[in-house]
Amino acid sequence: MIIDTHCHLDDPVYSGDFRELVERQVLAGVERIIVPGVNAQSVESVSHVCNQYPDILYPALGLHPEEVKENYLEELTKLHVALNVPDKKWIAIGEIGLDYHFSKTFQTEQIIAFRQQLLWAVAGNLPVIVHSRDATADCLNILNSMRKQSSAISGSSNLRGVIHCFSGSREVAEEIIKMGFYLGIGGVITFKNAKLAETLTSIPLDKLVLETDGPYMTPVPFRGKRNESIYLQYVAEVLADVYHCPLKEIYQQTAQNAMDLFFANQGPV
Image (cartoon, rainbow, N blue to C red; front, side, top):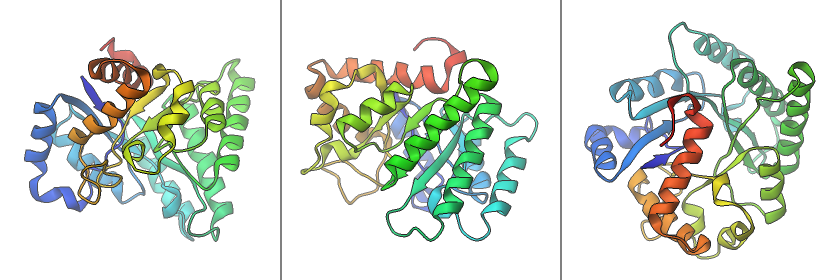
């Protein structure tokens, strides 16, 4: 069983062969794919693709930090309405977080939006899918403070999730798993100059989940092409070398980790 915890299947690049694409993933052993949202508009597009394969594709909802603009409060309002639609099942809050890579123009607004969506996750007992780029210190500080805040209210924190597309240092990885979060591992680990494989040597396999971030972050040897879940094989092969175990064990353990995080009420893999 293979679970892709992050693939933007609502992206127009998938529309031309969507059904063939999904069926190809299933034939390759990919049984579940989480489709994150990035803004209020994507509520409809994410829901549309997931409704076509409700036992395979699972929708998430969130305001991506790069989508935080002047109208971010309006976006958050629309998302909160969608989150609370009766009988609508969202698997997670995401993709949310902080991104200071290209601009810090809306840094304050990103922080406000991130905190607000973390509150939704705590209130709804949903995991979060966190995007953090050139914002590690702020991101971890906010997550830690939110965990303490929710613990003070209920006695223990239910804030949990994954740091998506992780490529940080060993120290950062250890801090993340200490919070009870998982590391999302994708194509980066196959890149020539990546140090991620070395970083993971001290991180337990039961703290990792697989992800593509499709259509982006395609692993070697397909870098530059449209990413899809079947390419997780190349990510898993590197992990099998890191952990000195069979490929099957990588698939099984990361799938169980994803089940524990996103599908805890659905039983073991």
